[in-house]
Length: 408
Image (cartoon, rainbow, N blue to C red; front, top):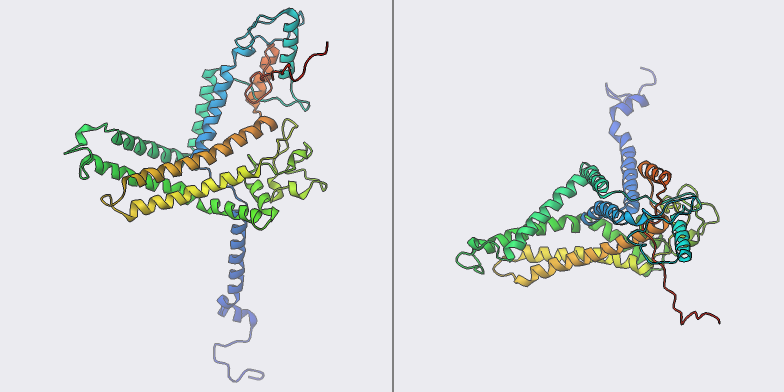
């Protein structure tokens, strides 16, 4: 055939389309490599900006704080029953907090002060109201159920039940609550009591590994950002930490930002040092119109190091429990490492909890439709709520007469 390749076989062809179909893997391999590389880069970026999964302490505190806040508001229920608007100027009923023997002038000033504490903010925002204890308990149980039916909620509920059950059994065994297991003696290494103490300790060690090692990648990522800031002086490390822990940490200088600045409204004149990385993780615009003060950096350092030390303590516990048998292992090492890991984790969690509570008390918490309806209903009835996170009358500062003497 004219123009044909003499060296071509009977099935060879010079058609590019047929050549592509004959060896598709040689053409698709670069595209596959690029897609895998893009997926790895995407996952890496998501990990750098992601928040740690909700741990046991955080999940428990979130549910408990809802119920505790409602109970706190209930304890102040009767203190607000006397704060009613009345055009006739009649004296309101005295409450448990306000029952004092005051003169009419003092009472008028006291009433005016109470009204000021119940007024909404300039932008119209009002903190959520209190509820009766029956309603608040029901609301807390509903919130807990909504948490349980989620995948993470169900996991942490089962996990916490195991920790409580096995930990409670270990406590009872250490207190010699089962004399029948002390055969031939309670302290005999082969007695049923000592064997079950070992079983419980091994199970608890495995349970503690779930949080200590499961959250280790996020803990050491935070430590890396912290070391970048402290050792290299790279301020972007602190900005990334601010974006990850936006619920309780505020960057230095962020308290000076306008109240309208938020994830969807970052103007060009906002200083870069006040913007977390990524910028979308900047705290929401405060509902009250007031921003919380900057969080001391040492609190971020303290929280990160406590979580990292918790992982290190668990490494030591695993080495002791699985590297030695119960005959050779020193009895004090297990209790020391378990106590150390628990204490440092709890202290670090408390720092984040109280700082987050402080931020919410200043910047506000969202009001649900149920809260707004309750506020409007109580206002129609003449019952007004203190406009703070506890729905409680603020404590008045006592002035020192020696520091500010009256002029005669």
